[in-house]
Amino acid sequence: MAEGRPRLVAVAEPPAPARERRNERRLLWLLAALALLCAVGWGFAQRESNRLERDLEATQRSLGEATASLQAIEAQRAEARSQLQALASEASALAERLMGLEALLATDPAQAADAQPMRSEDAPRD
Image 1 (cartoon, rainbow, N blue to C red):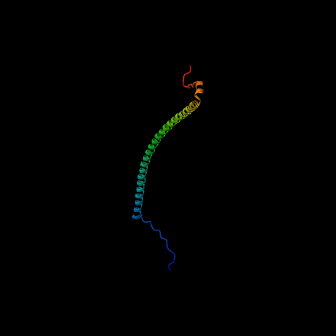
Image 2 (tube, rainbow, N blue to C red):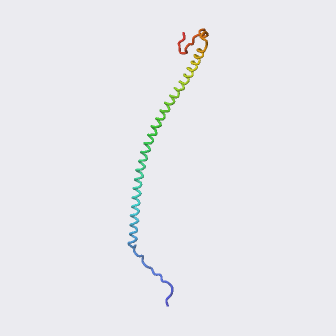
Image 3 (cartoon, rainbow, N blue to C red):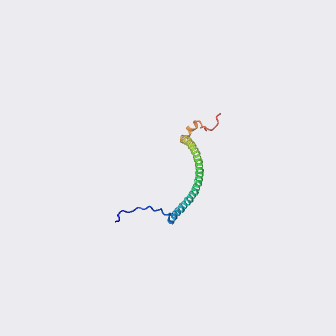
């Protein structure tokens, strides 16, 4: 009578089929293509990086020129402001002298003849 137990038999491992070898070759080609794609991408990134660096340098030069121009304009404005303040103080002094002259003209001519003549501040003294 046959027993119902399975029999285990040692069998030699068959050689790797051609299909597995094709899969290994495909994987190798895929890795090579991926490496090539990465190298091309890196090259494009380097080119873009160099372009951006040149643009940055040009922008920094332009900013330097604009800053220098702005400083020159600010210096000119400061000079104009100081001259305007000097003119304002001179105008104030002239307005005071004008009010003095108007007051003198408003007085009686007989009293004005008795008064001493006004001397200019800029006139040399004896």
